[in-house]
Amino acid sequence: MRDHQTNASLRNPKDIANAFKDYYCSLYNLNKDPCTHQTTDIEINDFFKGIHLPSIDSTTLQKLNSPITNVEVEAVIKALLMHKSPRANWFSDEYYKAFTTLLIPKLVAVFNMAAKSGTFPSEMLQAVIVILPKPGKDPTLPQNFRPFSLLNADLKIYAKILANRFMEITPSLIGLDQVPRGRCSEECLPGFRKSVREGYHPCCYNCAPCSEGEISNHSDSKSCKKCPENEWPNKAKNICIDKVNEYLSYEEDILVLFFSVTSVIFATTSLFILGLFVWFRRTPIVRANNRNLSFILLLSLILSFLSVFLFLGRPVDITCMLQQVTFGVPFTISATSILAKTIMVFIAFKATRPGSSCRKWVGVKLPNTFMLFCSSIQVMNCILWLSISPPFQEYDMDSYPGKILIQCNEGSVIGFYSMLGYMGFLAAVTFVLAFMVRTLPDSFNEAKYITFSMLVFCSVWIAMIPAYLSTRGKYMVAVEIFAILTSSAGILMCMFSPKLYILLFKPELNTKKTMLGKRML
Image (tube, rainbow, N blue to C red; front, side):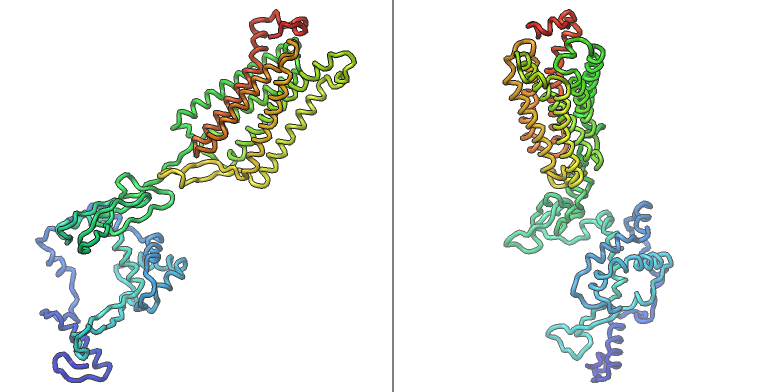
């Protein structure tokens, strides 16, 4: 190595270091010694006097001066590049990534203390200067080396945090005339990114819109960044906004009002019919074909109508668990009550024949036992379902862009469809049996009403299943609610409207003689 002034040969490492120091101190021919002179605030202010500079408002200034947060430090550490040279403190970027959790609180405390006091710890201001020879130059002269300063990693993290803060306001402070750009390309606005134009200079590029779920928030962005899982780009694709939560909301969906009013009307109607049947419980029309089964059927229909309210509003774990159970069990009780009525129609007809062995089965014991047994199967199925894999609240963020579907996951698909399947089996058996006995004498023609009610029930649920499987979110819930209300209303109207008509408008037909004759409607 040679001295750049005297051209003397240097071999001592200390002399070589001093030669580099002297060279860089005299590199800029200033009146003041650059190695000893410290620029004062007065000199800085004098330099900017008379220069018009853009200013920022107090709110932005307060945001820039706000304390550094854990989130900012963590974001910078995550963005550190791997396999770089160790810094002045000899800690590599890999060290900061490996011990992020431990280092973040300490770094935040140091950064905020330094910002408050206006001074940094001396270790943070140290730098290791590494010199690399310029290719093709004489390696014995200091001016033919390029110096690189390896700053303390803590200081680089702090500087990057400040740079990130300034990036939000620099577009409003720096004009387009201060940014060099190629003449062959227009500015790529926020929401777009630069795209390589094949066969042209790198300064020439196309502007491609950000892909779905991505944004760019500054001009001439080289790439777009993906929004967090719970956020979605706005129309301009320059900021991420919260995704819309979708469920059957009391505040926003007119369907909720419709379902609520319909449910209350039918539940009230069922309660009115139940009260009417209790009032006329000793009359022939109510006693015909087991009045206890009619009372149980009406109570189960009331519960079915009211179960709709568990499907409305924002789903939570407890409502998800209660939804299917409070709908499945009452429906099963309704189906078994109707099936028990159908069996009693058949047995009662057979018992009228002389010497029939069916006489011993006539009474309330058989239908009550049958109904209790069939309903207990569904109850056990629901208990098993809730014990092994109960329904739970689910956030579906992928089905629809920009929306979070808040819905209930059935938990066990087998449990859900076994519940529906069992109800369908009971309805099918009831329909077939009622259809077979529909031609019995008029005295026992309640089988016709049962046939119509089961026809409505089966038609609704057969049509509901493909619609249920082809929809998602609140529309899937709306399909199930519609099926519950329609099938329950069909049973209520088909089973009880003829008797209700006699009780209210044709009381003269409500006699034992009429019930045993052939004038039954």
